[in-house]
Length: 213
Figure 1 (cartoon, one colour):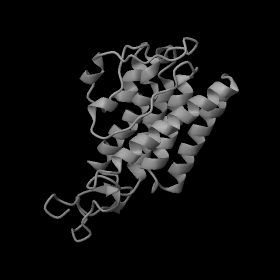
Figure 2 (figure 1 turned 90 degrees about the vertical axis):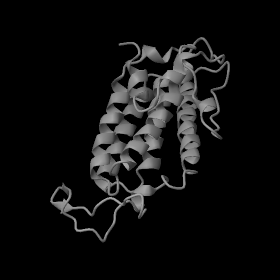
Figure 3 (figure 1 turned 60 degrees about the horizontal axis):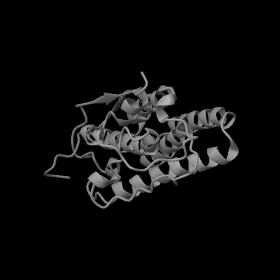
């Protein structure tokens, strides 16, 4: 149960690289990330299913790619709160820059995680229908208000800023992928006869094949 928040945040990422420990530690007054419930991570991943379902262009493999990046963001937002049990994957990927938290400062990892998820959804679902975008904003706002009432102002601000910075850094890195970046805008072939799939009474054209993409 203690580690379920890590599993939910990282289920789309290869996990074996996390076995070694990082040297970095933050202020000992920061509670370990495992202290918190898995509820927040579960809430955002349930929302992913909602957005993925209704956002145009989010068909496989676009959805899988976005899910992987979003949960990599979540993992990196809290990994330094694992008391050295897990390590950042920044060194495992080429040319990715992820700033660690400031040594000696206190962080609330639940606040960082929520901020990271909310910013990640904003970045990876810019074309989501207004109803789903409003739902994401509402969930983020409700969770933020709940956490804000429980966390000192300076810790809350520092943690939220850190979570958002992680989301921005990984998104900027993902944008270097010339084939995958914003692929939801051009992953269908409008010339195909749309009988292969049905979504809410709207037929979709077939996915582009590698030869035509």
